[in-house]
Amino acid sequence: MLFSRSGYYFFVLLILAVVGFWNSYFSIFFNDFDIYPQLNDVESYVHWHVVTMLLWLGLLITQSFLIRFNKRSAHRLIGKSSYVLVPFVVVSLVLLAHSQITIHEFGITYGRLYVLFLQLSLLVLFIISYSLAIVYRHIPARHARYMICTALTMIDPAVARLPIDTPSFPFPYQVITFSITDLILIVLIFMERNHKKGREVFPIMLVVFLFFQVMNLTTTRSQIWDDFSLWFARLPLT
Image (cartoon, rainbow, N blue to C red; front, side, top):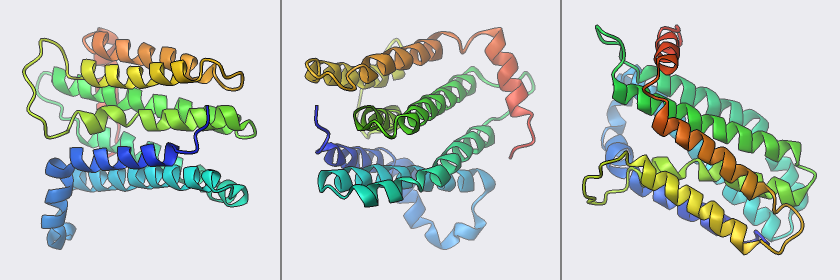
């Protein structure tokens, strides 16, 4: 399967993220831009995370078009910037997750435990995808597919915040966003079923995504996760 058009899909994902976060972030940010110095610490971590993720999407879009127009030297050169950008992505999300935790008299609320696992599991999926993309950077068929998987970690945050009136569901909304992510992987697997190079990547990552998705929906009420969350919340990070 050729990924010469992947830049367009990444751009659609960028638009989806902007629309999804418009009411909760972008519209407020632009309206309150003049009072930026007075924003609290939690909001500053949000800004940092937004900037790093926008830069990552921008990098994916740029790299895709460089390959599309056969600018491989520029692709390799710009790709090295990810060695700096990815640590910032990781740190920004960890600090954001930590800053959003509130320890009450009896610990942390279940809703916060659930969101924390969601944030950290998506971060782990991002790290796994990116790390494998770097490991296979000299094998384009695998490298490109793993980079696509880094973008798939953004499906849930973007879709979950779309301004759409949806009915109440007897299950977490992530069941829908996870299903969309998995469906994309299944479609990609089907589309390249006859390719010999790199076609094992998406089946592998589908299993990895499913593992963390099931964990997210089942283990956030466990004592192990309670203990880890309290330990994480008490770290002097933010």
